Length: 221
Image: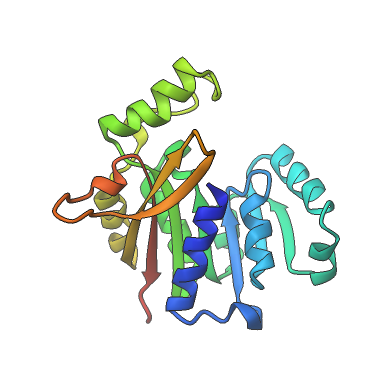
């Protein structure tokens, strides 16, 4: 899934002429083990990965050491902190990324507000998550948690999933406009993931019934 999401992010950055080759900045909020943050750094973005869990930050730092090029580039840093703490420091970035995090937070609107606050005016915000649909209940909860056992039971709460239009409304309320929503389709047999359009012909929103990624742009002052 990381490869598909990074391809999507790279394409949207190119669409809006974000100068990754010239050292634009990015933050990965809820960076976990650092796979996305490393990918952003390899794109040429000066990347900060933040996570509230110290263990995650430690794992991310150790994993980055496996690629000597990341250290030579000096493009990647990790800190244990929340998005709100980073906002309090007054930091802003060209690119704000938060992948599979929002479905776990207590206050989704407050979290979205912090993401937009971290973006510079005109900067891009990327959020990937799961839609609150029967398809997502089956694909993201029932199968992995109760049938295959690949994810611990209770990891996801279907009631906390956000439909793309709900997430878009939150972003609009705090100063950002959605510019694209695309689906993320998992293919377990080939262990791959593909980005697909939200609409397939006359089938509206069929591509975003389970996992999706959204790109929004912070309004300029």
